[in-house]
Image 1 (cartoon, rainbow, N blue to C red):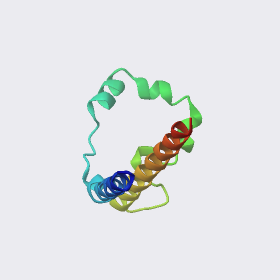
Image 2 (image 1 turned 45 degrees about the vertical axis):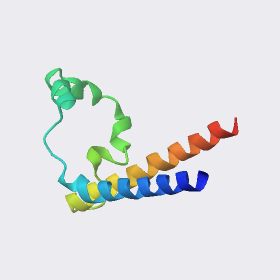
Image 3 (image 1 turned 30 degrees about the horizontal axis):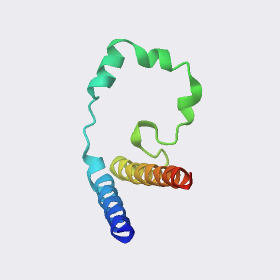
Length: 98
């Protein structure tokens, strides 16, 4: 059973990585509903005072050192998917030990 579950997890990761890599460059560039409401309520201006976001590694879902926007978005999606997978895997191992 464990081997079968492991295979399912790795296949799921592979599918998620393929989706992140090949579909994320085609995501809509127009703001989502939550972002539109935040702009209407002037939240972005209030958040600009908080300088933490200036150093965010994936600001606007791109990698700043890659000039091609589609490649940058695809790699950002790939790295983000891997990061969430391994964070979740680590939390699962910690919980399993208890």
